[in-house]
Amino acid sequence: MFAALPMVLVAYLSLTSWGGLGTPEFVGLENWSRLAGDPVMRRAVWLSLVLTVLNWIVQTPIALLLGVWAAGPQRNRAVLSAIFFLPLLLSSAAIAIIWRALLDPNFGPLAWLGPRLGLGSVDVLGGPTSAFAMIVFVTAWQFIPLHMLLYQGGARQIPASLYEAARIDGAGMLRSFWHITLPQLRHTITTSSVLMVVGSLTYFDTVLILTGGGPGTDTTIVPFLMYRAGFRSWELGYASAIAFTLVVVATVIALLLVRFTGFGSMRSTREGM
Image 1 (cartoon, one colour):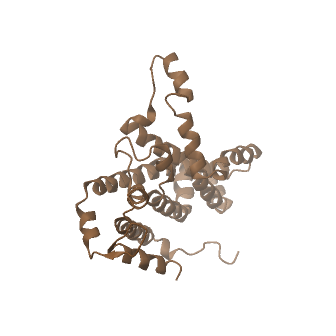
Image 2: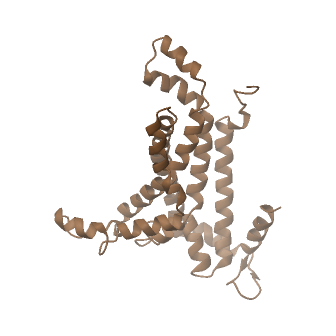
Image 3: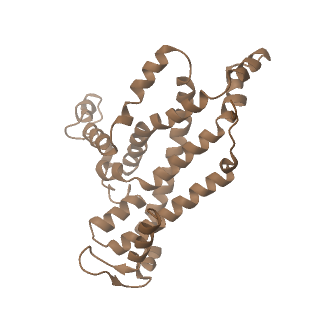
């Protein structure tokens, strides 16, 4: 009910022209026709897909290795893990504001460091490629601890007897990781991947604060385009069409991941223990 009713209202608004005041005017499929032919929307879809893939490629291996490492028994790992989890305590808006200040070409540390390294003015957020790369970096800095926590919990559920048996058979650390840890964490990898993919397709606050979708439209992903249409241009009907499309695509991708990774048929291997 709490999920279906907003979706029905958004679907209805996508068939109207509404600026936020007065009564929405029914316009049929006009917003959907505009959506299909909008070049900015097509580019935003491409950038969202690229961002999703890059987020997965960057975050998954790092979070997996750090999570397995943090699952070890050494005391220093617990201390370092606690420090590493600090970004989880900060909101996305606070993190974006901090990084925007650090990367400011006039007042940030780069403004002082650039001339001393012979680089002149370093405007990382002013270039299309570097701005997009910084979004990937800041997102990874924020969310890797969360996924690391998932892998840490999963790794601690792997029976130690499996590693003992592998050690007796002469398997080294790398073979144990490849043949025991990775297979045992396959469902954790699926869970993390679903969270990562859906999150990449839906969050926009980092883009809003860090780059504002620029330079130009080079970091305008679909969620930011939806925000811009709805709350800057006040085209709530068109923004609703974008939002409805985004929810449907994210849901379909999540269901496909669950379907083709076998996550839906997962059964506890520790049942009865």
